Length: 472
Image (cartoon, rainbow, N blue to C red; front, top):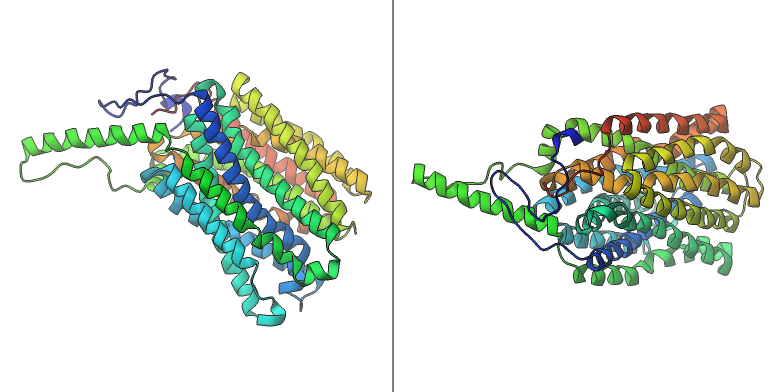
């Protein structure tokens, strides 16, 4: 399905499916804002857990779980455990999105938060290689797999809850709250690691104190669960379910009149949502995947590869590198908020293309500043690059949601998100390291330019979606 296949925006709460309609009360702006903020908090907590692992892997796990390897090999092995999550993410995404499209957004988000919380706390009590030998990295990989599966279902559900509650003129701004949650999770995890690096001697941190951030997530998970239990189900989803049930009942009555021996059933009642997406929305899914590649690639180049590069070849202190992440995350957040307003006023495509152009313009000055090895210039370079990444990320959620129909929307945006992450974020640190080691930082910059060009082409073909109706 493409934007041209979709009817123009409606102003009522009627949801057309065949000849059947269902009506629900429109949420108020205050209620929509409350749901968006709850999505923000839950997403922040879940991504805190996800990022605390990625940051700790970049800084600590090489020595703790791969001590027999060379420093470079141990770093790559640590990155490999990060990449395991990207194998798990599409698997978890398909499972969670299936139930999100069938059972509801709220239930699925609660389940994903619980899986993430349990797996993260278990990392905090995991024995290292010194204690458990080869079983230690095996168990680490298994827990990272569960983290990946949980986060695979998180993003799509959180975005849809915020988007489907929002009035049309504020969709981009409210749907950006979960996007901000991703940033908040990064900031929170980085702040905790920075505090640990300043408050705890290196030898104690590397020995056992690295476990504390993982164990502390237990409190955050409880907070997230309470907030998610207090919000209602998406009104767009509920109306769609009611319309399908009404249609099924009508179909059943017709079948009973025509064939009394057979009960009627709703059309495609047993179709898997992901199968429907791949059958009916192949072009949209492919293009949204390519549109997401640049966002996921550049985020991980900035906040994983450059973090490792700072404490490795540049020999910056952990505290200096983590401070740079905190400051640059602030600029990322500013870019995201500004872009969300642009997306609501001028269109999703305008905001997204502006972010892509900004990343292309900023990448080489950024890498030049970083390569000086000066802590202050490293912060400036990271911030310069993070700002347009935030601009490009803000409209992604609402853009993708408007491209897919309600019945398969969770599966559609999750498929694009996870496939784009597999092609982008999952391999970005490896590609960046390989390019840097063989060709230098200039090659890393060209890699960023290439993925931005691919995404810009996809966005051009997808078109604008601000005029489209979610209730379909």
